[in-house]
Length: 305
Image 1 (cartoon, rainbow, N blue to C red):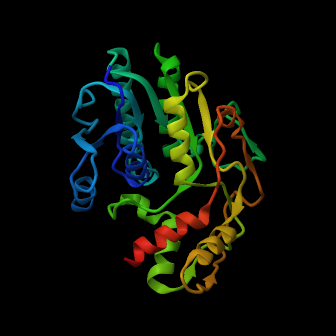
Image 2 (cartoon, rainbow, N blue to C red):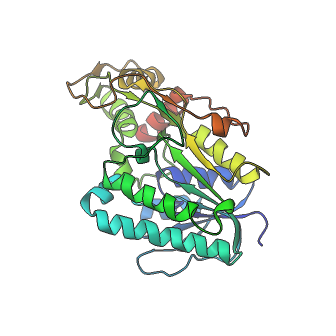
């Protein structure tokens, strides 16, 4: 086993690049990339992070030798799953199979797999616990739930942690964001930086559980270092939902000058406050700070630059 080496599968994306950069302070970090882009190449040149090509559609196994841990962030996004559900399912299962093979071959001691809050489905509930029934209504959620099933039913399940993040937000490490560029947090920060004003399509009264990247990174670091209790399924969220109006106001408050906010008339299913149970991860010592304004300030500055 290669002590201190981490492989982040899909670790050059929106959250993955931030996670890789943070972990590189204490670990020997490598990431996989499926295609080279100028923005990602420039980011890698400024770091000590190694990059290996990996595409689950054509590559049978993970690259790069042995690692202390693998972190899988390479599931297809919601847009890709919506366009081709079968391809998204196939890609997710193939990547999971490669991660499982690495565990069985003792190329890694543990796997931290990023699933999604979408496995719970689009119907609002008052409380979301890891053990509640799952009812995904979108191919994105179906693909993630299928991969979870493969991991938890495997013979190496005791070496796997699955995290289900809610809405993670943060300043990008580079400009190549792919479909994540349309996320509401990034869109609002971009509007604040470029237009000096923000406009939402919804009425601001829908609820979301918003988790800054810094809290998610702290959770991963905790799972990497934990000796007991880490190999489970964990909700990864702030623990409470806020309105989109509150999110927009936090972003506006982080801007260097006043930013007016306009609202539309859009609505969705999440019209009441809800709670995401994070007690399982908190029992390991994780306490999220949920400092949205800090991430907003850095993100606005990144778009302004």
